[in-house]
Amino acid sequence: MKTSELIEQRAAIVARMNDAHGKDDQAAFDTAATELRAHDAKLERARAIDAADRSEQGRTIHGDAVDPEIRSQSVIETIRYKMGEPCDRAKVEREQAFLEERAGKKADGIFIATELFEMRATQTTGTSAAIVPTSFRPDLFTSALTNQTVMQALGATVLTGLTGNVVIPRETGSPNVGWVAEDQALPTGNATFDSLTLSPHHVGAITELSRQLIMQSSPAADAIVRQMLSRNIALEIDRAAINGTGADAQPTGILNAAGIPTEAFATDLFTTTANMIGKADIANVGSSRGFVTTNGVKGMAAKTKDGDGYPLGISTIFHGEPVQFSNQVPNNLNPTANKHGLVYGDWADFLIGIWSQLDILVNPYAESAYSKGNILIRAMATVDFGVRRPASFVKATGVAVA
Image 1: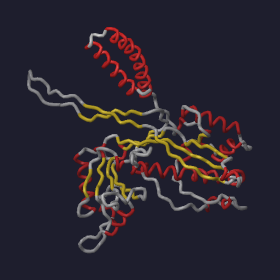
Image 2: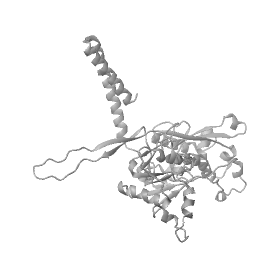
Image 3: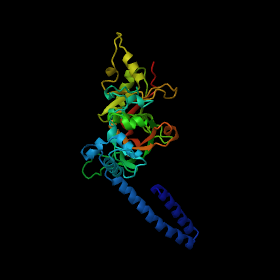
Image 4: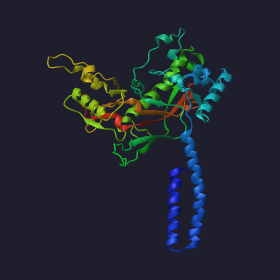
């Protein structure tokens, strides 16, 4: 039971004690008092667990702390292991034991280390047979055209190896500071705080792979399978980080986060971006700043000309600040369902929490795949987003592309 629920129950018990005291009902008062003592012990245990969760040290899953063998994990060989097909079973079992220890739980299927997906994935295929020719040339593999992830390119802070809910304290107000003469009291006023909580949100996809791909492909096909499994999930995580609604199990993205200052679109893009930078300057926003917006806004910026008919240039329009353009940013925002997203800020204050490596479940018995000798692969990831300081960002409203 959650600590908040136990606190509510305690308040109800105390209310019963007050009611019994008002009615001079000693028996009812004693019963409630006994219940309160037992409940307080339960509440104390829950608070101790919460404190332990908050103080637990995160585990580094990058760099020297990673088992070197994990970096050589083969996706295809791990899937073969789950299918009961020939593979280096001892190696796979060592990898799974390491990943289960790191995640703090058993996998629903098999774990694939997140380190294997530290690349932009852009591949999709309708049939796997086309990538198992007599002369396999992975260097000539042609991927589908897809959106590109942008949040990490902007400098968002990624927290990995998380367990349980993550509570991050935030200072919302500074203590008063002042000058005083001899024998005068200092001004009073305490710092104020709140907290940012990251909680697990789950995203996943199901894809069908041919048995021929799993059993016969060149080892280079392992990279292609990584792309197939990670691309759509990575793009959906990126999309939700930008425009997640916070409803229907989605986390909340930067465009829908509470407390983000806004700047109404001015007569032109150059003025709007200048106003956004000015608001950030006044708010003492950090120096790791940048813009993110749509490719539609990019086109509008590229066509903007000065009084002599010469293009101003994208760098001028955005005042020399870093800018990322992406189809992940929506171009159908309200009030008229045709407005483009435009956000500026210190992206180090945008947090991406990752709870575990990709969890993959292999199902060779699903009816649709079984009749063809194929297998279904379900891949899931667990993430959440948070804004450490809402004042670190400014989002434009009403951006229309002519």
